[in-house]
Each structure stands twice: as C-alpha cells, then as structure tokens.
Length: 253
Image (cartoon, rainbow, N blue to C red):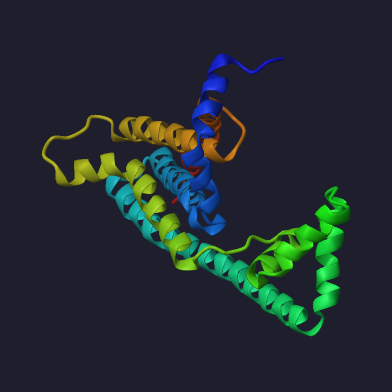
C-alpha cells in the first residue's frame, strides 16, 4: 500500500538538501527534548496525583498548595539529579571506551584495521571497494574510533552533556508540575476566587498531558493525537487512583 499523499509531502520537505545536511551535522547528544518530555510527563503526573489525593481526602486547599509545591521542588530536583548521574555515567562509559580504542589502535594498528575490514565486509563491501573504505576510515583516527564505537559497541560518537540533560528535566518538571497546583495557588492569593479549583486543575492538567504526549510523538512512530491520548489516559489513571485512595482514607484520624 502506498503512503498517503500527506506522508509524501512530509518526506519531500524532510529530505531537502539543507535539512539533510543539518541532520548529519547534528550530534546525537545535542538533542535534549526527550529529557524535557521525560521531566514534563513525570512532573504533571506526580504533582496532579498529589493534588488528587489531597482533594479526595477533602483536606484544606492550603494543604494542596503546601504538598504540591513541596513535591514540585523536591521530586523535580531528585529527577534532575538522577538524570544527571545517569547521563554522566553514560558519558564516562563512552569516554572510557574511546580511550581504550585509541590505545588499542596505537598498540595494535593492524589488528584494529582488520576489525574495520571485517565490519565493512559484513556490510557487503569487497575487493578494491572494501580496501578503499578501510583506507579512508583508518587514515583519520577520530573517524576510525567513531566507527568502532558505533559498530562494535553501539555507542554514539559523542555523549550528552549531563548538566544540560538535568536542567531540561528540572525545568520541564517545574513548568508542567506547576499547572495542577496553580488554581489552588490562585485562590490562595487572589480575591477573585475559582468556584471549583480541583475542576480547573483537572482540565488544565489534562490539556498539559495531551500536549506533552503530542510532543513525545516526535520520538515514537505514533500520530501526535494517539500519543497525546495515551499520556492523557495514563495520567488520568494515576490521578484517579490517588483520588480514590485519598477519598478512602479521609476518615482516618
């Protein structure tokens, strides 16, 4: 079956000469959008779950504000630290493997050249074409090591910058996680009161869930509306469970 016409149009615009060049020049570790989405999804779900639990328990609105903001800062920072440590570990592994391969190339150049030869032979290169490919790659040490990292270890040529990954996660957590708390915070400081802050919190948080899911679709082979609905449903289930637990336990003193 042929792809729909709009798919052809997307492919035409995606594969212009300039966009191809930009994609090839971009480093694998330079895209931190996935860290932003990661923080946004978790920030929205965890904070709204707390708001739902407190609302289900029929506690005072100021408790929502206190617990929501406390979670926003503490859990957001915790996620950022975890992402930083994880990204740093991956970067250190990459640096260690790169250093090892550079050492092996210096000590065993012929053996490492044979690795390149076998890698490209498996890709279908043969004869003079194979030897030419080996010569080109092994004449540039950086390219030589990058090729080994990718083909032998399935590692990118460059890693992410840990503090940037952590910052993207923390900012996203704060931005999206603040949305469920905002209606209660508004009533706390404003003279123009919202009649049902939990309803406003639910609506605005649902919209943010859908928007984050739609953004997430950039990393998966799903339409934006499908990914948006998936995130909305998952976030809604988490909130519903928290609300039910709070409602069940509200009579406990």
